[in-house]
Image 1: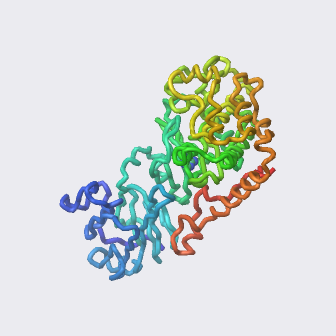
Image 2 (image 1 turned 135 degrees about the horizontal axis):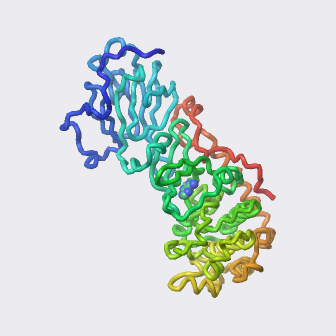
Image 3 (image 1 turned 60 degrees about the horizontal axis):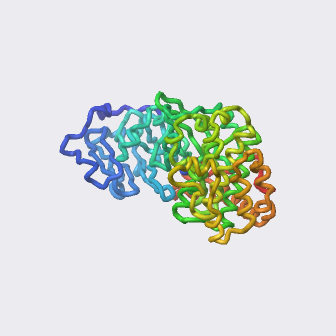
Length: 469
Ligand code: ADE
């Protein structure tokens, strides 16, 4: 329908319609959000509950639109329940706020019609109008104002939520694409980080079920924002911290998938170079997970820069040749840099099985260069001889004889374990099935659920490579 004549004054959201005494300090209330009126008859609404209805109906609405606020003509076009606002917890992590248009004559967000039974993400400073796009009723503010730090270019497209993790290059936050409600992990890479991005098109052309999809890059003055496939289970680092150590069978399920991913990268002449538990993402907060590798191709400069000390957490995973002959690493010798990943893989395997890193403490560089580590910790946990052997093949100082990923995957520990491969195949299938649209983040209304395209995290795996061998 066309724009209706609106009798209520159109007020710029900068001009507050609220008197100061109406404005309680949001920090002192337990409100998670607030609606600021854009119509002088409406009042400030602090959002405390999870669900709200707005409309002309007299009962069962939280925000009532009355003839005191709107002309008769507009009133006649307002539905009993015109829109709803609700917030839902996503996993164990964060709440996401949605607005659903339940009206016959339209609810608009920032001037765009949402569409009957569609629901969009509601984020900070979004303006809600009803019946016509200029008939503003509220501006929504999200109490979590730190997200305002995101550049406009990012906020236009994404509603950005809590921190999922902090990596070598910057933080990763949960984000929803506003128009599609797809969820992502939004990685911010600070410009001052020692980083050289590979060609975005190379990165986004990679497709493997154990590699996190990179969907998009947003370039801003201070940082590059990368939208990554969201993995709800967090990182292997968090899993090890929570469970102390993993069983051998659990470690194998995870490491097999990592090995497949790294082999795929190496076959395409991409070395990861920053392989560590913090870059290994899980579908569930459990070792029985689908595993995806993140952050490859970002770390090109790590091995050649002189500030290895600032590289804190990750030093423990770096190969000896990185310390002993940094210059060599800068040369484009593919096999050489690939072997850096084999070493890191060995460190991760040791850590999963024992709950400890093989090289820690003071003078870590020297310890790594000497390659002396304690196998007795593994024996303590009854680690099999064959698992100990693969670690030995990986934590080998001489990179010429250190196993590459073809050899790793052919090692008895992996190759002979058909049951493990079957389990991994089942996990992958289960993950892609469980991630069909409706269950997780949809509202109760079936027709609403149908219209929402959910997370790429929930999308079917489109990869052509099968995990089953
Ligand atoms: N932490 C870092 N990257 C992530 C991702 N893609 N999904 C979930 N948590 C993450």
